[in-house]
Image 1 (cartoon, rainbow, N blue to C red):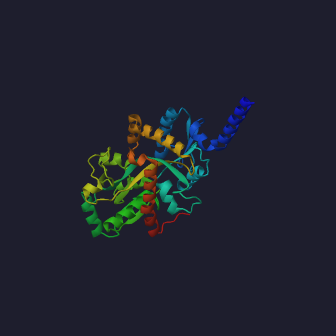
Image 2 (cartoon, rainbow, N blue to C red):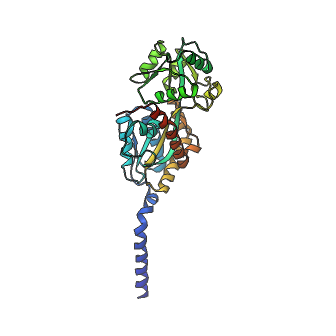
Image 3 (cartoon, one colour):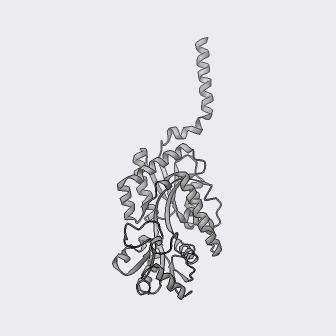
Amino acid sequence: MKLARRKFLHLLTGAAAAGSYPACAFALDYSTRPITIVVPFAAGGATDVLARVLADAMGKSLGQTVIVEDVTGAAGSIGVARVVRAPADGYTLSIGTLTTHVLIGALYKLDFDLLTDLTPVAELAYEPLLICIRNSLPAQNLRELIAWLKANPDKASVGIPGAGSTGNLAGLSFQKATGTTFQFVPYRGDGPAVQDMMAGQIDMMIEPSSNFTAQVQAGTIRAIAVPAKTRLFSLPDVPTTDEAGLPGFYASIWFGMWAPKGTPKDIIAKLNAVVVAALADEAVKGRLNKLGQQVASRELQAPDAFGAFQKAEADKWWPIIKAANIKID
């Protein structure tokens, strides 16, 4: 009877433990099936390529297939919503940008909260913007450009790929920082705008640096400054805004990874460790550099720090959007 009693108590203890098992089972068993990374843009773009580079590295580390799924529409909000509504088990992840995980919060009426309905995993990479001008514009550096803009209020034309775009908001921020005014000219993408700047039809653009690298290197347009703390690998002779006379003016498109709200902390920790290891790999760094992207600082690769950074970016850009009364239906 004593042995039977011991077996009974053992089974009872096991049953009691089983009641709490699901709360920790994810972390103990993670990962046992394929993981999906949702990209909120079409295949072939910078975010999609970044996701595929990471998926390959993460899959090897986790010993699982990591699938990249492109879910497009509404400036990325449809793809983000897909992850918001997914089970919080670490098997559906979101990769996105400043646009999809901050800006659309002020541009669109969303049925979810970008800052609370997702759990940050890590900032992945960033691509600084670049301030470029037509060759014939009479300014040789940033100070001269600002002086020329002040001497010609509302006369300069700045190309943007649509209202509410990164370039549009960076331009508004530039106006505020410099006390200048100019006209925005919307285009169907950066490509046509760059072509018009090369032809002298518009004066200036502030867009992701990879849009301009080849043209700057070819001498068909001029790069004035990089709104970042460090110079670009691809254009090392172009000064930062700190160096060029506009300290503290920074603008970049950044990329991050999130999981659904409520994902267990130990799964987030495991995902973060895998991502950090991938970003430290020289082959991964090289592939990202070819895309014009630089790996995020080790500090911002930490979930809490990245979450605080995302909140700071919302605090920075949402008032600019609201002040300009930019709304997209």
